Length: 70
Image 1 (cartoon, rainbow, N blue to C red):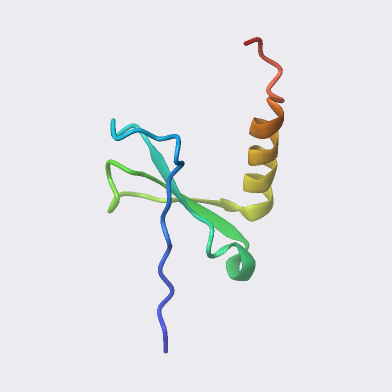
Image 2 (image 1 turned 120 degrees about the vertical axis):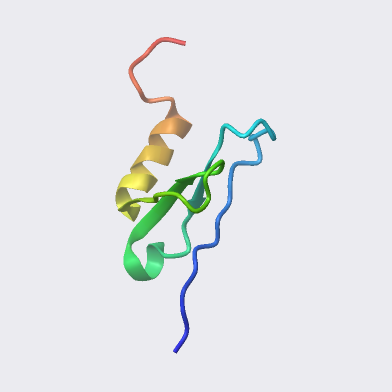
């Protein structure tokens, strides 16, 4: 029996200021979820969201599609 563990990563745009989130997308294909955590508290709570919602979120960020002004 193998135990799956999240493979955490954070954006290459993150500086070492400690104000980052980390994501684990390796469960998306098998569990259809993406896990998110606070990089300052790696043993703290996780937010698990549907992989499709995370993909939509990333698409919106890339398109700057939040309806606000710059």
